[in-house]
Image (cartoon, rainbow, N blue to C red; front, side, top):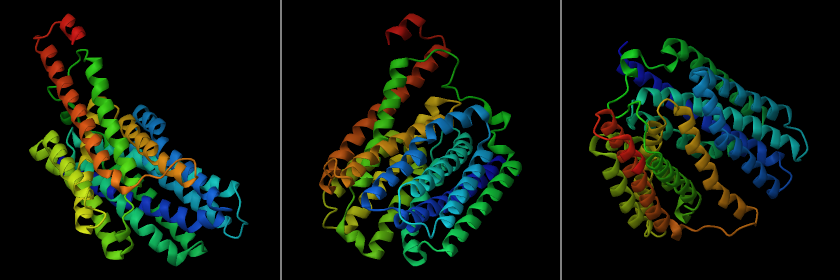
Length: 391
């Protein structure tokens, strides 16, 4: 099997199971946790608890995964933990609504979600070799799972059949990931691909440029997450339009990396975000504009992830976790609004949010390019240490 075939298998398996994991987690939340919560406020706090462990928890899990080097085992363990969450939910089907049981299920499912996403994320980022196409394909499929889960939950509800299906699917995913880890070299990049590209050297980089790059990229992820919580378009209640909206998210993430690798990350980010800002201004009344806008807006997702992982060098899990921490923080305002603590964002804010995203990613990619130029100059002996410190 060639290295290209291995890479395709890794991203194919990861993307397929990503769909199933997100489907399983959101189905669990909507079919089981809502009935088990005492009231709406309980549900809001349980969702926040789940999001914290499903997204923010990926940062420490990612750091652990980088250190341990067990990406496939980590992903398989995540699926087993989600199966365990379904087991707890099954046992509690007949329980009275309360606080403790849904909180326990949310925490267990969130931890499982984190382990899976980081595990496969490490494997895919190692194979990407600084290109955004593979990470974009891996991440894109989750949106379909999030879309489909509430539809299935409305049909199957908190019944034993749904819990049993969740357990069996997650056990099957765990087995597939464990087997893939043995077949596909545990996600490790072979020696000939481990050679660092020319822009990476042992010389000390400019800390200011690295901080600027990371900050710009992470702010972009934060704003993208917040924007996703305020896309409350009335036309999304039409099933076909809701499906097309989801398809726009999936294709945006999937094609953003491919196009970015071909024509350049900066050009792709600026064109897609500026066009999305214009289209979002008309999205309230025109579904086609909203669908096109969400497609363009999501094209930067694989670019920010890959650019940050490139900065982090041999810590792809940590980079992945940093982006998901920003995803969690971006959802907090909407959860506070649901709890009545803060005001609710509205879709008319989207053009401004998108323009701020464009500023953030432009600063991040510019600083990243300067960062690697500095390294090239240092490795070539064109830059003295004093100049590096002054820069």
